[in-house]
Amino acid sequence: MDQSRTTVGRGRLYDSILDTIGDTPCVQVKSSVPEAVRLYVKAEFFNPGGSVKDRLAISIIEEAERSGQLLPGQTVVEATSGNTGVGLAMVCAAKGYPFVATMPTSVSIERRKLMRFLGAKVILTPKEDKAMGCYLKAVELAEANGWFLARQFETDANAKIHQNTTAQEILADFEGDRLDYWVTGYGTGGTFSGVAKVLRERRPETKIVLSEPANAQLIDSGISQERSTNGSPVGSHPAFEPHMIQGWTPDFIPAVLQESIDNKRFDLLVPIGGQDGIEASKMLAQKEGIFTGISGGSTFAVALDIARNAQPGTVILCMLPDTGERYLSSPLFEDVAEGMDEQEVALSHSTPGFHLID
Ligand code: PMP
Image (cartoon, rainbow, N blue to C red; front, side, top):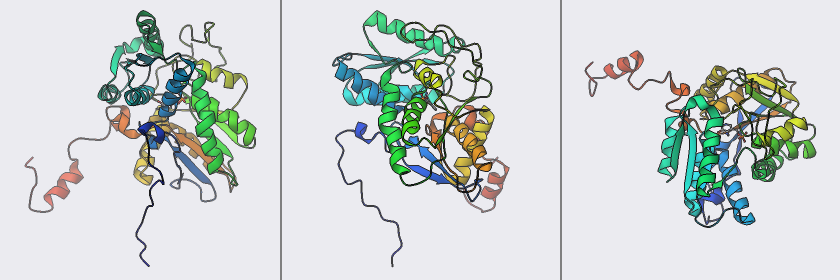
């Protein structure tokens, strides 16, 4: 019998790239995982814009269209560490809205370029002003120009899309199976809040594990975030320090996250160092062929630690929020050379033709 791989197509035609958002696969990882434990990753880089934030972007735009807050042709503006910007740029391009992103200079260059490639305008803010400066710039621009501010950190459309899509996919994929732990970090807290709410109701046995950078443990500090009546933060959180896990933990506790902290929708809060996240991301790439960013590596490092200490039969799922391709100019690729190393030069010289003279 011919054992070559075959595929059958998706069984449908798509009206728009936006209809391909979601339904990302849960894939088992075996390297370094004890044999009696199953560890899966939910690979959000399968989304068309390469990250989990495509879900948020389509949700914000479609909710605003339905409520009449966003009018045809109106400009959309948002403060973003990158992935939300790429998602919004993609959604806005597909739906015909101009899009302006405000972004700190600390975020990787390829993210700026990606957004501009998708037709967006990118306004850079000084990295010294952190996420807060970038956010206040977006507010200023929206007010001055009558633009629609996406408000990813406060809008109900954020956690809601994860309740309606991400969580439903997890329920369906693990139906009839164990799911002992679900592991995530937080940026806006949308993924965590939306999925945790559904899991608490539908899979109460699943332990929810939340992670934050070891040098920016905002939740663990127990210090509450000052915020104004519309939910937006007032001032940086005192426990914040700049960290390496792009997209995680801004310098304030977002309103979207606060509700789930208040309702204690997590069972474990685990700190992780950025360098450990980088090592785990490299491991996933080199041992499993799974290519994710620093936040994915960090989430995976936490999940792996749980796996190593778990009872036989335990099943774990962790989120991989985005693709590693978004990090070429970041510390994730710092050790990856452009030129050939000694071994590569030796290999090149081991046959007579086509070698560089050096
Ligand atoms: N990882 C990366 C790379 C991200 O861009 C984000 C979103 N900022 C997250 C994780 C966290 O997702 P959420 O905003 O849903 O908490």
